[in-house]
Image 1: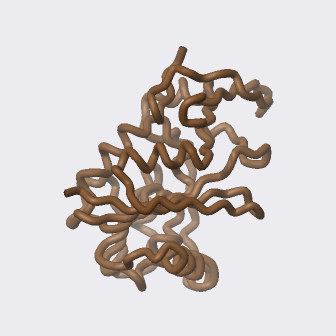
Image 2 (image 1 turned 60 degrees about the vertical axis):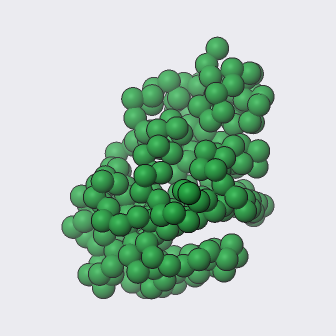
Length: 233
């Protein structure tokens, strides 16, 4: 029986199945941490941190950043009382919208998108001169104080590898923000390997020795937002 990639338990059971693009996908749920996993996609994606699907993002305009992304990041910072200081890393930054919107709050902002860093490097708006797309975390020139995983965790195939990849680049006192889709029919795609509950999000936070863990559920969009703080000392 396959071990849970979040807590390591072998206690899982058949949970559901979906028919997508002429294929059946079996989902199991871990009886220990309640992580839901797509078994077929999980097996296919073990070779990589991220279940990568080649895609091209369109870098948003200044108007879209100001109207959409900036209010969103400002609301999160206020809601969770995030200490906006130093450097922010947007891990899995997609089109760079959240990262660029954060440039007015943080001294330095980094964006890592494993598939599209070269695309972002050549298309980032020059107004955001404190935003640096990076191809690996080894390209960072400072420790980061806040890490954002925005609709990223559901694509990750190996959580321990990601945690060990990120940890050395965190400042002594750091914060992490993550948003994920809940397990709903409208969120089931081939690229979504895992689905979290409040319990499994807390298990993820434990990997960073988290404190002050908060989870908010958006019942309108069926999203969950996780916030926690950590200390490397």
